[in-house]
Length: 216
Ligand code: AMP
Image (cartoon, protein in one colour):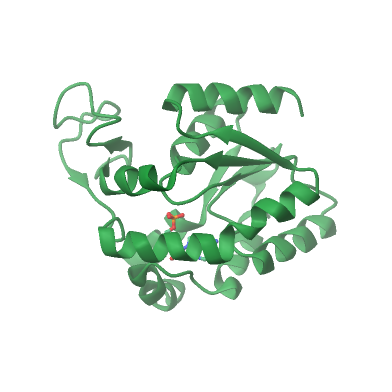
């Protein structure tokens, strides 16, 4: 099963993608996570991507399409994958169609996680992750059971993404509305779009997505 998770920054794409990957035994492919790893490594891709990421803009289509083209060819993707944060432009969506057509594969569904504009800012500005295992938390909505201790690995150090600050968030929202929101129409026209209510609790959103996937 090959899926796309669409939605603005802060919609919960990463959180839901991790849960779905576990449940359906498919691979989560987050271009944002891959780019952050490239920036950390200081690779050529990382150096090229850094300025756009710091400013809350989009990295070039060429770079992200190249990353995804290589990644979906890896053996661990044979059972399927969830694209989380890709495609983000119509050019990326078109390139993905071509890549999949060459392999005689297709996207089974595009899950569009809908959230209110005001909620996005609040969600993004409150989020952080365990520095050791990457488990995601939120100051208000998803606290660890014991304050300051990761539920998953008992780590005690946490990090916040550099681009999760109010100024950069506004640029990221702008990029979303300008470049990514048109994909909703693109996939609707292809009959692939499935909307879910991203304002519900994390568990409810997971259940709604599972219900949608049971019907495809
Ligand atoms: P994310 O973790 O999905 O919020 O992505 C973080 C940042 O990585 C974005 O703000 C962009 O700068 C960059 N990025 C991630 N995925 C893409 C993509 N498909 N196209 C362009 N830029 C991307």
